[in-house]
Image 1 (cartoon, rainbow, N blue to C red):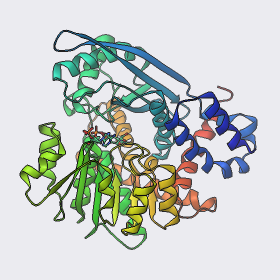
Image 2 (cartoon, protein in one colour; image 1 turned 45 degrees about the horizontal axis):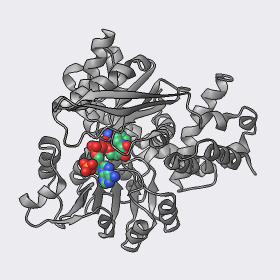
Image 3 (cartoon, protein in one colour; image 1 turned 90 degrees about the horizontal axis):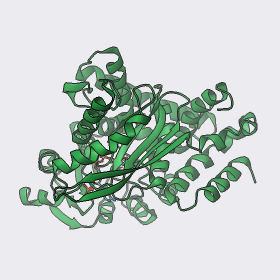
Length: 444
Ligand code: NDP
């Protein structure tokens, strides 16, 4: 058995009941075999064994009081995966499905994503099985304060800088930051995605969605094409989905469908984004409310049906494994040409294989959604320099970073003989920088 397969097998045996972590590790490790062949010294240094083992895992109790006075208890996690190239960096997810396997898959992905941005940030991820849906502001605040009362001792502006993810937006970051500041008596850039009045960066809200569209635009451009006139499907109706829709529309695309976890809307004339924003960002409502305001749109219960709608470009922006093999086949049959992942690991391994075999241009999450964390790193730079860049400045830097990511993964894929395979390209380009730093640090 070769080195990569051996590491993967040990990982599965040593971390049972972590299917999402196994899936992410399989996708990454299998693409690194050519790197290991070129660098036999990595095996001697047990580099892969170290790469897949988090530097530190913190798990903790989060007790809080609901509006009826009842005490509730959730699980809290922070996985500090790899700090070879910079402080741990990665979001916090609040969702009932959160468990150690999910946080570890996200953390592992984050190492390579952060490396790909070209900025000095290591990989980490955290969260809780707390469900923010239907909770009052006071309950959210109680929970966030309790969560930070343990987390604060493990993080810091030069140690570990969390951000948002599913269920953690501007409101939650505000409560988390307020509690950190109170406990530490420090006003520092310890979280990103902060409000503009207390150290946040312009464009952070839009960054992941905009970045996704910038990198897809680059892939289109390389093929003499553009977003203009393209039919686009976007899953999700949260932060990433909304700003991917905004940028795609501004480039002339027609976005015809979006969903939340209950069902999807289909609007053949093109979705009216201001209606979605009002429902999701202002009222914190459900996507089905859209059809009450836009009579030409239709609402369908359940999510999977969205992938049966014909489109040129699919941008999955909700959650892991939302495109399985059957959905991928449907998309291909209906003529999809580009799939770019806004969410983390939204396509199963089988779905990725179907896209690649069918000649679909497939841009994997760790490259395609890196705009969020890249802009978080720009927020960190502004915080430590006590300065504030304009929207145009940050947006231009974001676009430049996304174009560089595209070029780097393109050339890494080519160098290793896998031209056009961006899964290979992104993993290899991201890994080499981390591997070089780990080798330089010795056995740590
Ligand atoms: P939000 O919480 O803002 O939105 C998530 C959206 O996805 C909501 O519409 C939600 O619907 C839907 N969703 C969540 N779980 C499911 C599910 N199991 N089935 C169907 N729909 C679901 O999160 P974000 O937009 O921030 O994150 C979306 C994805 O992008 C995640 O994979 C995240 O890791 C990734 N990402 C986010 C970044 C960021 O900067 N925010 C950066 C990089 C990646 P509902 O409201 O009904 O739950």
